[in-house]
Length: 227
Image 1: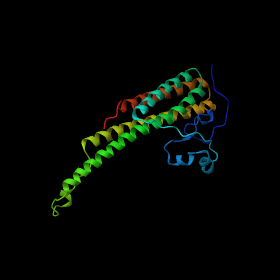
Image 2: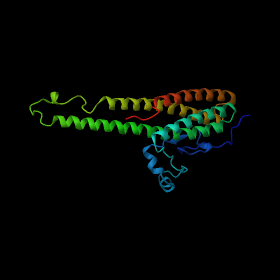
Image 3: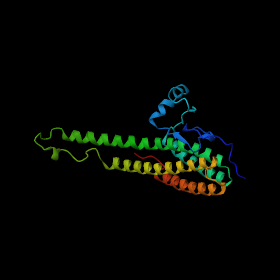
Image 4: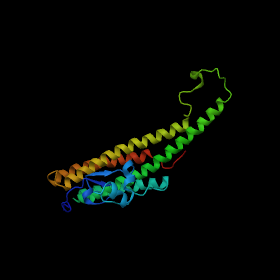
C-alpha cells in the first residue's frame, strides 16, 4: 500500500526541527546558521521572518557520551526511514529525515567543539612554553632564527585536529546525501517524480548512500574522547 499523505503546497522554507509534512523537500534553516538567533523565540521569528512557523530550538547533547548516543539513535531512525519507503510510506520516511538531520547535526557540533577546545588548549600551552623559553634570548638573533614555522603546534594538537577534520569531512558528506534524500522525498510526495515505484527505487538507493555515510561518520568519531 502506498501512503503519500495529503497533498499540500510545499513551504518556501522551514526551521530545522519542524516536523510537518510540508517541510519535506524544502530549505531548512540549519541549527547553527548565523540567522538562528533571529528564530530563538516566537516573537523574534515574527519580527524577522513572519512567514516561517516557529518551533523550539533543537536541544544539543550535554556531553560527548550523550552526543555519541544521539548519533546511534539517529542511525537507527535512518533504518526506520528505509522501512517506511519499502512499505510505500513516503511521508513517514520524510518526517524521519526531518528529525534525523538537526539532531545528528547537534551531536556533531558538540563532538567537534570538544576537539576544537582541546586542540586550542594544547596550542596555548605549547605557545606559553615556547614564549617562556625565548625570554632572555639574544636580541641580535634574526627573525628567521628566532621563530619556528608554527611554534604552537605539537603532536597532541595535530592528533586532535586531524580527528576533528575527519569528523568534519564525514559529516559534510552525510549532510549532502541526506539533503538529496529529503529533496527526492519531497518531489515524490508532490508527484514530481511520476510513478511511485521508480520513485521508491530512487529513494531507497539514496538511503543506502545515507546509511553508508552515516556509518562512516560513526567510525570517524572515537568512542571516548581523549585529549
